[in-house]
Length: 382
Image (cartoon, rainbow, N blue to C red; front, side, top):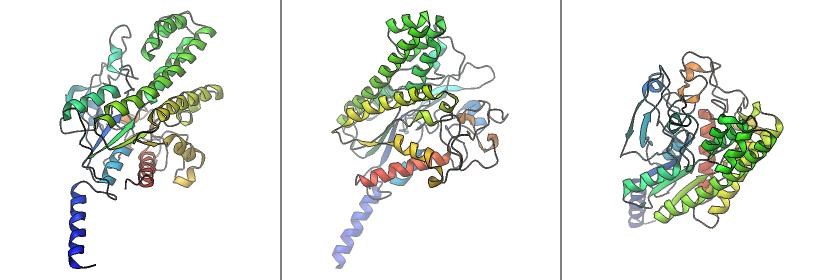
């Protein structure tokens, strides 16, 4: 190679590095993330939660990162920050903070967020009538609103130099499941759960009566709702991300919630229903993205392999949550949002898979990030 060619190669490398070349050449200079708690980098790291060292949905520490942070570091776009922070709690003794938007930040993911419905678990929207909940007061901005907020911030388009990540669906499942769980008993609680899930007035009327017919109606509504949410998410990715100029778009499907500690408290038939809800969502999401340039990442299958063959991944415990439910160091009980190394069930939980009943430990997030990077490499992105 002559000196001119060497200098040209060096110049190309410098240009690539300035574009956030990172792990191997993807030409991005920022990471934009939409989703729920699995992608949230600190929306609720305020007030009491921040004071105890919490703020992410894992075992929190100075070095704990979720998968979006790890992937961003790998492609060289810098540490993501939460586009909105705050906590609108109405729980006595728990201090929150006003909602604050951060123009310089592009991680819009929020714990409790759904695809388009504002009624997620512990959402502030549920504090109002007719629900009147006393809860954490999570803003739970749905992904449809997250995407709109980003486009409003950027003039309605992407530059094609962003790595866009999308992962959501679990809170749709939890709200639908809550509707099923309350249906048989009937009454106002069942009606409220059905309304929060997003079911039609006809289904709400059916579950109000209670009994076996109410449960059947609830199951059908839940499965339909999960399919609709998956299809809707695919449409949002196509119309609000790809059609707006985004070039590198990662869409992760819904992990198998049926293999979480949450689901392991259920009987086998109910766990099967939870799995069907997951696969219904994923099937519609994948079908809707078929033929697009979005990279569909199957963390559902990967997670099932981790659960079945944990030693292959350096996991020693797939059943016990790392976060203690009784530690006084965590003001949120067993929730990973307030969990730190000071409030775990053992001195060393670094090889556990789950932080709480549904969220990963830092190891779980690292394994997910490694899998995502492997899929990006296989697609020729890096």
